[in-house]
Structure formats: C-alpha cells, structure tokens
Image (cartoon, rainbow, N blue to C red; front, side, top):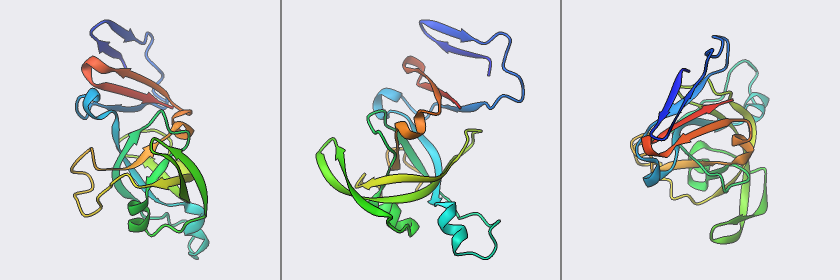
Length: 175
C-alpha cells in the first residue's frame, strides 16, 4: 500500500501491511469535485437465483461491467431500472424509497456485485432498490464515467475504510 500523498498531509503505513492483507482499490478517474467517485463494477443476477435454475451449481451468473457511483446519501444501493431490464433481472417486490426528488415506489432486485481491478470482496445476493438514474445501455457501458448504472450505498460502504484526497482526486478503499 505504501503512502497516500495529499497536499496538506501524508499517510505512511510503517510497517506496511502484510502481503496477505486484503488490499483495496485505488481510483483516480478524473477530478472528484466534478463527478464524485465513479468506479468500475460488475453486476448481474444474484447467484441464488441463477444457480436455482441451473443444474450445474458451480456456474456463476454472467456479469456486466458498468460504472457505479459512491453515494453516501443512499442508505441502500440502487440500480438503474433500465440496467435492471437490460440485465433481465426479475423484481422481488416493490417498496417506497426516499430520493432527492421525494418518495417513490421502487422495485427491488437481488444482484451480485463485484469490483473490477481490485481485491475488494464481492457482495453476493445483495438486495438493491431501483430508480431512474438515466443510465443509457446503448452507450459504450464503460466509455463515460457519468453513465453510471448503480449507486453504491452505505449498505456496501459500511464494510469499507475509505480515504479520500480531494486535491489529488485519489480515493483508496480497503475492506
């Protein structure tokens, strides 16, 4: 892991973590002030639902790479309703959620959530709400970090230590 440099401080781990330590992911996509933290994720139908319909239980569900946005204001993670349809997810129920625009009905889904290019532990069979995030599945799914398909909420972030250095647009996440 080493050192995180930020203009006003430096974090140095001495001694460095053991090599067996679950490290993390480091993201520097573009200035954080402009777009927040949008990270590459892989999402798909929850394993429990996928293996239920397959004789070979060792086969994992296919995952699609999209961007996810870290949202400290979201108590639970949320998938774009268009992405849920694109992935062929089936609703597990409907409940009301509170969004920045007020209360609204939301379909719930079960997904597997993995974090690309990192050692962060995946979330398997994660219940998520849905809303319209204006995700466009016809765009290059990984071409524009602002075309994010999920909000990563506090239900996921509660398992992490997150270091955010705004001036260098660096975020380090450890689980």
